[in-house]
Image (tube, rainbow, N blue to C red):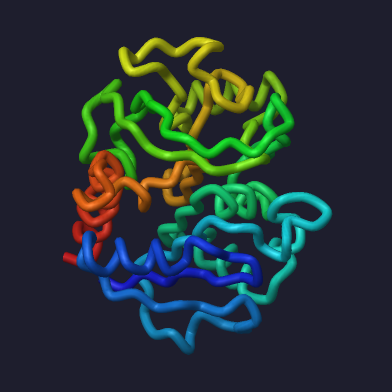
Length: 236
């Protein structure tokens, strides 16, 4: 299993992601530079991950410039052919900017950068990044963002629910999904979604920061286990 990890100017979670993919998930990993014109030079890839950070300094808005990088044209083609694509934090923002995922990530409701552990309720456990979790399972995962407030029109939000595209919702430690447990003001406490075909995924929390005992939290490992389960199935 080989996973490509995109690197943009301003990415700062790429090495964390490479480490967890290799050491925890057991995948071969390949860094992919934003100026690459093609994925072909990296050999066969079973999936692509867009890590967190501040691509291009978050100028204009988060992910807006990264959308126009050479490599994103290739990522869009990869996704449109059914390839597995997963964006975390800034990666989620980029996927929304290039319309591989619906909606947009806006400035947090409190207008501040938020860095803390949050609880997530697993809304759909039948996807490539949630299949190792139980339905409604509560996990604790860190967030670190200033622009994490998920937003879309009411009609589009309704479509997300109808098509089981909502993966995670912010909740409290007992699983209550309410305004008090919503760190950034996201509509319906949405923390992670997929596209309609269920091959493109985005989430604001950072599971790579909660995947090893040395970090005091392994809840995020189940998300990587889910990815391995899914991709191993296709490889087999």
